[in-house]
Length: 145
Image (cartoon, rainbow, N blue to C red; front, top):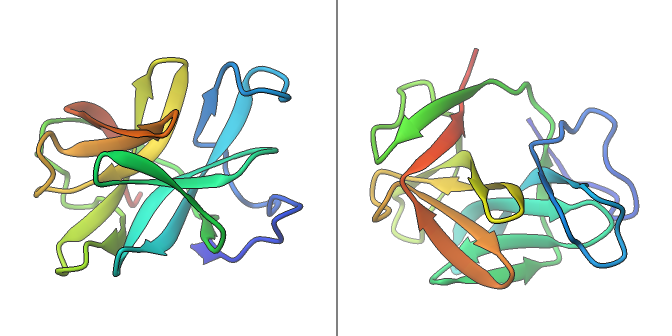
């Protein structure tokens, strides 16, 4: 389900998971893909904006990551409110203390952004946008079919 990409090309089997409007130098809307990366002794999911770079939300900010994997599996989303994650949510990583993280996405500002979900997160979901991490309680999680 995960592949290390050639950073110049998107794997042909990587599904578009969202979009962002207003990315400088990119025709609108810019497609966004799901990534995961090691960060702060954990593995966190985030976004790769086509033609731009990869980012993960963590600790109130959004961090650029050079080394990451891109999601290449099937896409089926389930709507979630709060921390009530479905039992078939797809795990993508963990916090440094082992708490599980799941693939999420949410509508926010100028697009739909992949991020992370977890029962331990204050509102259930975190996405990164314009250098900051935002917590949301209405979002979708990727689930096994």
